[in-house]
Image (cartoon, rainbow, N blue to C red; front, side):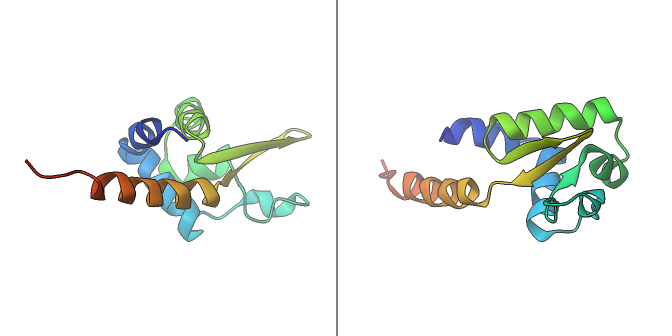
Length: 105
């Protein structure tokens, strides 16, 4: 896990909001209509949430995926994205350990 890559990915306000929305399940999802995608979101879901262009949303999702924060599954014509809660939990733990290990002065 690359803590710096995750920090960089979350350093963008839009991507940070996307992760928060995925974590709190505040994005309504068309992926519910696809078997096995109960907790996923599509690019279209994120476009509706943000009002951003599809290409911009795809770029943000790619950055989050490369950082390991989300994963993508493709079935037929749909791509759905899922929060990697294990990575987020590991990141939070590692960040806390790293910050607590800094000695003053």
